[in-house]
Image (cartoon, rainbow, N blue to C red; front, side, top):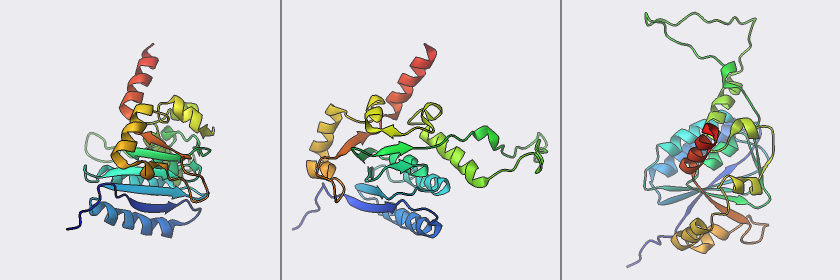
Amino acid sequence: MKTRSTKTVRHFQLKLLAYANSYYIDRVADLEKALARKPRRLQIDLIGVGEIPADFALLIRSLLLERSPKTTIITNAFSSLQGGSVLVWLLGDIRLIRADARLFFRQVNASDFPEAELSGTGKPMESKYRDSDLEIDPEEADYARMLQGIEEYLPVRELAGRFISVPLLREFGLVGNAPMDHFLATAFGKSDLSNGPPNEPAGKCLPMVNQTARMRKGRNRSRRE
Protein backbone atom coordinates (compact mmCIF):
# COMPACT_ATOMS: atom_id res chain seq x y z
CA MET A 1 0.00 0.00 0.00
CA LYS A 2 1.35 3.42 -0.96
CA THR A 3 1.82 5.93 1.83
CA ARG A 4 1.80 9.70 1.47
CA SER A 5 5.21 11.31 1.93
CA THR A 6 5.47 13.49 5.04
CA LYS A 7 7.91 15.78 3.20
CA THR A 8 5.47 16.84 0.48
CA VAL A 9 5.17 20.59 0.11
CA ARG A 10 2.34 22.08 -1.96
CA HIS A 11 3.48 25.09 -3.96
CA PHE A 12 1.35 28.17 -4.56
CA GLN A 13 2.78 30.85 -6.83
CA LEU A 14 2.02 34.55 -6.41
CA LYS A 15 3.38 36.76 -9.18
CA LEU A 16 4.28 40.28 -8.13
CA LEU A 17 2.57 42.39 -10.78
CA ALA A 18 1.67 46.05 -11.22
CA TYR A 19 -1.97 46.99 -11.87
CA ALA A 20 -3.22 43.40 -11.86
CA ASN A 21 -6.27 43.42 -9.58
CA SER A 22 -8.03 40.71 -11.59
CA TYR A 23 -5.02 38.43 -11.15
CA TYR A 24 -4.96 38.86 -7.37
CA ILE A 25 -8.73 38.39 -7.12
CA ASP A 26 -8.36 34.99 -8.78
CA ARG A 27 -5.27 34.00 -6.80
CA VAL A 28 -6.82 34.93 -3.46
CA ALA A 29 -9.78 32.69 -4.31
CA ASP A 30 -7.37 29.90 -5.27
CA LEU A 31 -5.43 30.38 -2.03
CA GLU A 32 -8.63 30.09 -0.01
CA LYS A 33 -9.40 26.79 -1.75
CA ALA A 34 -5.85 25.52 -1.17
CA LEU A 35 -6.02 26.33 2.55
CA ALA A 36 -9.45 24.68 2.82
CA ARG A 37 -7.78 21.37 1.91
CA LYS A 38 -5.69 21.74 5.10
CA PRO A 39 -2.35 20.77 3.57
CA ARG A 40 0.41 19.91 5.99
CA ARG A 41 2.77 22.40 4.32
CA LEU A 42 1.91 25.10 1.79
CA GLN A 43 4.71 27.08 0.18
CA ILE A 44 3.85 30.50 -1.27
CA ASP A 45 6.40 31.44 -3.93
CA LEU A 46 6.75 35.19 -4.51
CA ILE A 47 8.35 36.22 -7.78
CA GLY A 48 8.28 39.34 -9.96
CA VAL A 49 9.17 43.04 -9.99
CA GLY A 50 5.79 44.45 -8.91
CA GLU A 51 4.08 44.31 -5.54
CA ILE A 52 0.94 42.91 -3.96
CA PRO A 53 -1.53 45.78 -3.34
CA ALA A 54 -2.05 46.54 0.35
CA ASP A 55 -5.73 45.54 0.33
CA PHE A 56 -4.95 42.12 -1.16
CA ALA A 57 -2.04 41.67 1.26
CA LEU A 58 -4.45 42.31 4.15
CA LEU A 59 -6.93 39.84 2.65
CA ILE A 60 -4.22 37.18 2.31
CA ARG A 61 -3.22 37.88 5.90
CA SER A 62 -6.77 37.22 7.11
CA LEU A 63 -6.87 33.92 5.20
CA LEU A 64 -3.54 32.77 6.60
CA LEU A 65 -4.48 33.70 10.16
CA GLU A 66 -7.68 31.64 9.86
CA ARG A 67 -6.02 28.55 8.38
CA SER A 68 -5.92 25.16 10.05
CA PRO A 69 -3.35 25.01 12.87
CA LYS A 70 -2.06 21.84 11.21
CA THR A 71 -0.93 23.78 8.13
CA THR A 72 2.60 25.16 8.06
CA ILE A 73 3.07 28.13 5.73
CA ILE A 74 6.40 28.54 3.94
CA THR A 75 6.98 31.84 2.13
CA ASN A 76 9.75 31.85 -0.48
CA ALA A 77 10.96 35.16 -1.97
CA PHE A 78 12.53 34.56 -5.37
CA SER A 79 12.65 38.34 -5.92
CA SER A 80 13.10 41.51 -3.92
CA LEU A 81 9.87 42.50 -2.18
CA GLN A 82 8.09 45.80 -1.67
CA GLY A 83 4.86 47.03 -0.11
CA GLY A 84 2.22 44.41 0.57
CA SER A 85 4.50 41.65 -0.71
CA VAL A 86 6.68 42.19 2.38
CA LEU A 87 3.75 41.54 4.71
CA VAL A 88 2.75 38.34 2.90
CA TRP A 89 6.33 37.06 3.08
CA LEU A 90 6.62 37.87 6.80
CA LEU A 91 3.48 35.83 7.53
CA GLY A 92 5.27 32.56 6.80
CA ASP A 93 5.97 30.16 9.66
CA ILE A 94 9.13 29.40 7.69
CA ARG A 95 10.58 32.09 5.42
CA LEU A 96 12.98 31.62 2.53
CA ILE A 97 14.64 34.43 0.61
CA ARG A 98 17.17 34.81 -2.19
CA ALA A 99 20.51 35.80 -0.70
CA ASP A 100 20.75 39.08 -2.62
CA ALA A 101 17.06 40.05 -2.36
CA ARG A 102 15.94 43.14 -0.44
CA LEU A 103 12.76 44.41 1.21
CA PHE A 104 11.28 47.88 0.86
CA PHE A 105 8.22 49.71 2.15
CA ARG A 106 7.43 53.41 2.42
CA GLN A 107 6.11 55.32 5.41
CA VAL A 108 2.42 56.21 5.68
CA ASN A 109 0.96 57.65 8.87
CA ALA A 110 -2.18 55.85 10.07
CA SER A 111 -3.22 59.00 11.95
CA ASP A 112 -3.78 60.70 8.59
CA PHE A 113 -6.78 58.43 7.99
CA PRO A 114 -9.40 58.92 10.75
CA GLU A 115 -12.07 56.26 11.14
CA ALA A 116 -15.73 56.89 11.91
CA GLU A 117 -16.63 56.65 15.59
CA LEU A 118 -19.92 56.24 17.45
CA SER A 119 -21.08 58.80 19.97
CA GLY A 120 -22.60 57.87 23.31
CA THR A 121 -26.03 57.82 21.67
CA GLY A 122 -25.01 55.11 19.22
CA LYS A 123 -24.97 57.54 16.31
CA PRO A 124 -21.87 58.35 14.24
CA MET A 125 -19.94 61.34 15.58
CA GLU A 126 -19.66 64.35 13.32
CA SER A 127 -16.39 64.33 11.41
CA LYS A 128 -13.76 66.89 12.36
CA TYR A 129 -12.69 67.06 8.75
CA ARG A 130 -14.25 68.49 5.63
CA ASP A 131 -13.68 67.32 2.08
CA SER A 132 -11.92 70.59 1.37
CA ASP A 133 -9.55 70.09 4.30
CA LEU A 134 -8.40 66.54 3.68
CA GLU A 135 -8.52 64.27 0.65
CA ILE A 136 -8.42 60.68 1.85
CA ASP A 137 -7.14 57.98 -0.48
CA PRO A 138 -8.60 54.57 0.53
CA GLU A 139 -5.58 52.82 -0.99
CA GLU A 140 -3.25 54.84 1.22
CA ALA A 141 -5.39 53.96 4.24
CA ASP A 142 -5.01 50.27 3.37
CA TYR A 143 -1.26 50.79 3.05
CA ALA A 144 -1.18 52.30 6.54
CA ARG A 145 -3.04 49.27 7.94
CA MET A 146 -0.65 46.99 6.07
CA LEU A 147 2.30 48.72 7.72
CA GLN A 148 0.74 47.96 11.10
CA GLY A 149 0.98 44.28 10.17
CA ILE A 150 4.66 44.68 9.22
CA GLU A 151 5.23 46.45 12.54
CA GLU A 152 4.63 43.11 14.28
CA TYR A 153 7.88 41.88 12.74
CA LEU A 154 10.04 44.91 11.93
CA PRO A 155 10.28 48.50 13.25
CA VAL A 156 8.48 50.39 10.50
CA ARG A 157 9.40 53.92 11.55
CA GLU A 158 13.14 53.16 11.51
CA LEU A 159 13.18 51.10 8.32
CA ALA A 160 10.55 52.74 6.07
CA GLY A 161 12.04 54.24 2.93
CA ARG A 162 15.22 52.15 3.18
CA PHE A 163 16.30 48.97 1.44
CA ILE A 164 16.48 46.09 3.90
CA SER A 165 19.11 43.54 2.99
CA VAL A 166 19.57 39.99 4.22
CA PRO A 167 22.46 40.98 6.56
CA LEU A 168 20.17 43.49 8.27
CA LEU A 169 17.44 40.85 8.57
CA ARG A 170 20.06 38.66 10.21
CA GLU A 171 20.58 41.35 12.85
CA PHE A 172 16.88 41.16 13.68
CA GLY A 173 17.16 37.42 14.23
CA LEU A 174 15.21 36.55 11.09
CA VAL A 175 18.12 34.94 9.23
CA GLY A 176 21.02 32.71 10.15
CA ASN A 177 19.60 30.84 13.15
CA ALA A 178 21.88 27.78 13.00
CA PRO A 179 19.99 25.58 15.52
CA MET A 180 16.69 26.31 13.80
CA ASP A 181 18.22 25.75 10.35
CA HIS A 182 19.36 22.32 11.51
CA PHE A 183 15.88 21.57 12.85
CA LEU A 184 14.26 22.61 9.57
CA ALA A 185 16.68 20.53 7.53
CA THR A 186 15.87 17.52 9.69
CA ALA A 187 12.10 18.07 9.80
CA PHE A 188 11.47 18.98 6.17
CA GLY A 189 14.42 17.50 4.32
CA LYS A 190 17.32 19.55 3.01
CA SER A 191 15.99 19.53 -0.54
CA ASP A 192 12.83 21.34 0.57
CA LEU A 193 14.79 24.30 1.97
CA SER A 194 17.79 24.57 -0.33
CA ASN A 195 16.20 24.79 -3.76
CA GLY A 196 16.82 28.30 -5.01
CA PRO A 197 15.18 30.11 -7.94
CA PRO A 198 15.37 28.42 -11.35
CA ASN A 199 18.45 30.46 -12.37
CA GLU A 200 20.15 30.46 -8.99
CA PRO A 201 22.42 27.73 -7.57
CA ALA A 202 21.07 25.58 -4.76
CA GLY A 203 21.58 26.96 -1.28
CA LYS A 204 20.98 30.60 -2.23
CA CYS A 205 17.66 30.77 -0.40
CA LEU A 206 18.13 31.34 3.29
CA PRO A 207 15.69 29.79 5.78
CA MET A 208 13.89 32.14 8.13
CA VAL A 209 11.62 31.42 11.07
CA ASN A 210 8.88 33.36 12.79
CA GLN A 211 10.43 34.79 15.96
CA THR A 212 7.93 37.58 16.51
CA ALA A 213 7.53 36.96 20.23
CA ARG A 214 11.27 37.08 20.85
CA MET A 215 11.68 40.23 18.77
CA ARG A 216 8.82 41.99 20.58
CA LYS A 217 10.33 41.12 23.95
CA GLY A 218 13.73 42.48 22.91
CA ARG A 219 12.29 45.66 21.43
CA ASN A 220 10.10 46.33 24.48
CA ARG A 221 13.10 45.81 26.76
CA SER A 222 15.26 48.24 24.77
CA ARG A 223 12.49 50.86 24.84
CA ARG A 224 12.26 50.63 28.64
CA GLU A 225 15.99 51.10 28.93
